[in-house]
Amino acid sequence: MIRFTLRRKFILAFVGLALLFAATFGTLALYRLREALTGQVQIRAKVVAEELARESSRFLATPEGQTETPQSSRLTRRLVAGTVLYAQIIKDGRVRFTDGQDWLATPTEGRLTQPFVMVRRVTPAGAGYLDLFRAIPEYTLERQTYVRVGFPLTEVDAAIRAERPRIALASLLMAAAGIGAAFVLQRAIVDPVYRMIRGIRDLRRGDYSARVTMRTTDELRRLADEFNAMADAIQARDAELARVNEALQRANRIKDEFSAAMSHELKTPLHAIRAYAQLLLEGIDGPLAEAQRRDVEAILAAGDHLHHLIEGILRYSALEAGALEPRIADVDAAAVIEQARKNVAHLARSKGLPIETRAADNLVVRADETMLRQILINLLHNAIKYTTQGEITLTTSAQNAHVLFSVTDTGQGIPPGHEHDVFEPFRRAGDPSRREVDGIGLGLAVAKRYVEQQGGRIWFEPADGGGTTFHFTLPAGTRP
Ligand SMILES: Nc1ncnc2c1ncn2[C@@H]1O[C@H](COP(=O)(O)OP(=O)(O)OP(=O)(O)O)[C@@H](O)[C@H]1O
Ligand SMILES: [Mg+2]
Image 1 (cartoon, rainbow, N blue to C red):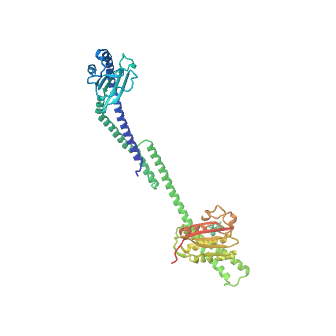
Image 2: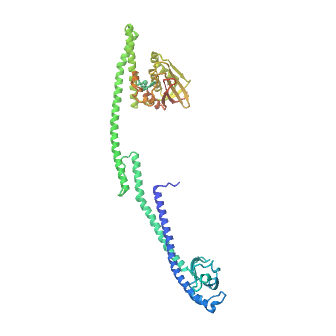
Image 3: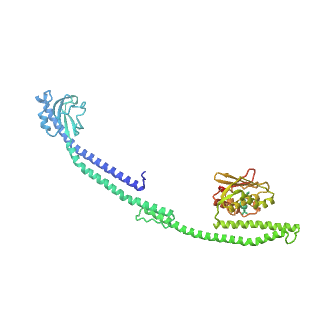
């Protein structure tokens, strides 16, 4: 398939036009020449026909002119010798005298309706001639008495034959000039377009220094100037963006480093607080009164909560820093589910919420075990946090090349319109009254990043009869 580029179209159109013009010129020139030359012959032929008619009128009055048989006439011979193809005198519609070519079989076609008729014809040999009919003045048209002369156009044909090569040469020169002009003009018009295309392509590929130079002073130059101005603006904005971006990245890095460092520093005293609270509860430093025990339990619970928050922040900072690369292996789903369940069992028990797990047997996933455990803990944690009564269900099933995990609760549900933002960091759904449940909005952000890093997908939907179901998939593995 030929590709019709602008260059090809331009040249084709121009060459086509040049050829058309040249052909039209040649044809027209030949036609005009033939007309002009024929016109001259016509005038001469007319004069001859008039003369012959006059002479014939006189001749018909002589005794010889009364003869009935057609025969050569000295008169016509004298008059027309050498200049005409044939000459005839027709009296009362019948040929009386004829002279010249034999091939003129039919004397007339139909009746003569005008005193003078001239028809252009071609001999059987292909030569053009004029067939003239001239009524003889003394006879009315009804008498059908007239002379007929054939006047050759051989001179015209010869002249045209002689002219033809010159006209053809002129046409050829015209066509050649047109084709030459096509190539020159296409350079002037199409080349700048290609230069513009190259400039735009370079700019699109990120070379913001790309500029187009145009030596002309026309609209193409204006186009190039506008393009260059646009490239200037883009280059300036790009530099500005890069600067801002760098500043932002620096600020972000400082923020991450700060929160990681802070969280880390907080963990040490927190460990101590939790450890000592545990010691007190175990009665190692002596028995506690009931009221004291409740207070220490409250201290431990608050410590656990703080620990959860700090872990969340640390995990998220590590993700942001890109420091966490999943270590993918074949993982036994049931074992990880059991670990996650144990992790949140204490919280679930404290709220009186049973956790039911329905895992298909022998499910193996391609996953990072630690990440998978954390995803499950975050989802279970939410399910327990945002549910006051009912139960939590965790199911798994094999789906073609994936394993589907689903965590369903019977809680307050997620209001519509939060399909995406609950997965954003530090976003919490619903009105502030829900905020009395502790959290900073990192659990789902971490879960989503973990799932996607392992080649899976996470989403949620309202559960039947209230509550929410969170689903996520991970690639299925093979049991060794
Ligand atoms: N099972 C659920 N039922 C109702 N709402 C939920 C549920 N899970 C998440 N949400 C909503 O999505 C928001 C984001 O959840 P996410 O786990 O990211 O943050 P969080 O639980 O508020 O805090 P964090 O997990 O960091 O302690 C929550 O604040 C809550 O509004
Ligand atoms: Mg959460």
